[in-house]
Image 1 (cartoon, rainbow, N blue to C red):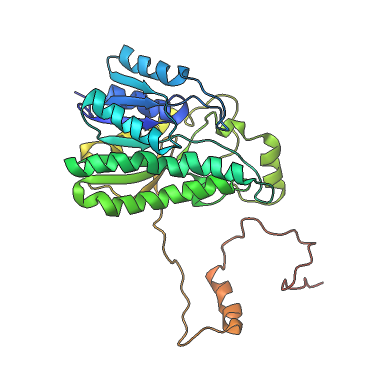
Image 2: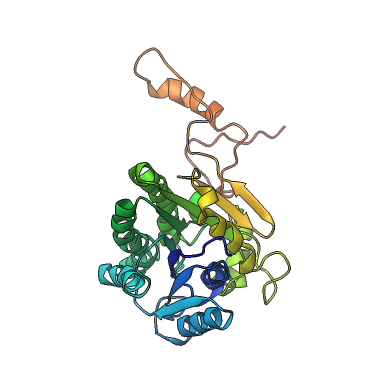
Length: 320
């Protein structure tokens, strides 16, 4: 008996990396798995049906049940087709997990609208495109699990990833909203911010990492790992928490964001004021200039300007 016997799952981007490990584990736990992956390159170009087909075969070879799907989650039709395939093949949809993603890294002042749109389409639109049709059926059957994938780039920020970070922050926010929309129907929605050595993380060039470090920019993600997943950093360490959130035992876990890497699972802090200043009337700029610094005291600027940059408002360094 597996923890997910009789359940049916759609897992986007499950031909490689974290998505692959999630699909394999769900299959081992008894779920029927629609393995979605159009087999694109990291930047979203190209197509290859091999990865999704191979994962489906691997699940079946291990005694599980799976079928491959090659639709793009970036389109409404693609998302609907995945869910329809689950219904037509297995009779129901219980789990929708959106892992699919691409990268078009560029500093924002060099980023094109096409680079912005391509990343938003796969990550954020993709989450909607699969969660929407799945939620219609889950609401009717009074049961379901929806899981999106966020990122440290979205929760804390990272240079050169305005498109990716914006989408990943939105996925966390969307998961919290879905939780409120669907919780009363027995459907949960949560998000995972993973840390793992994957094909995507390995595409970030050393020069970009060195540039960020030399600029004093805080890194929101783990440093570049050696070739191949090192111990405790492989994508297989992320999959168990994802699978757990799909089980019946996780019925009361809803609207949460979990940071998962290696053997560590952390609950992300709910967004809210951690410090507050107040005034009896309308703030004036003089008051704010005196009191706002107390809000950020001890909290570092993630990308401070160099000391030799002459900035209006910056205190002049003392010779003492």
